[in-house]
Image (cartoon, rainbow, N blue to C red; front, side, top):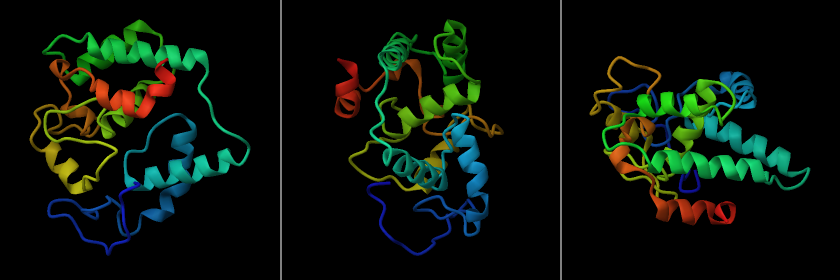
Length: 186
């Protein structure tokens, strides 16, 4: 979102959304439902979800900074280690099952997937289709088109790029992890 600039709505070639940001023309009416989903711990992957996250964060920061606990940091390190240790052929679905079996991340499967999707959006969890990083913007249409190139997303609305594009052989991008989370990895 830090790279997004004001722009006119430009419909994507194969999708009913803006190819730059992913917003739909009339999506604002769903903002309260998105905030509800966020409060349950889910990441709402579209740009409107990012908007909802950021506005909520701004409101929360008025009451002081938000710091992860030592337990949060430990679980984050464990998650990264699990990803790093994945078999080369492990799929996102197989990893999610393995993660669930460890029982160290509480919550629903959707919450765990939201964490993985968020890490994939900033490139900490790489994907086989396109490079993502907080250093540059990738249009929503490019991410959606990437789904069309994957076998595990065809006909499945629950498995989305960029998390869907990960494979065990890709592991973790430790350089991006350090760039974004160095303070929390000590």
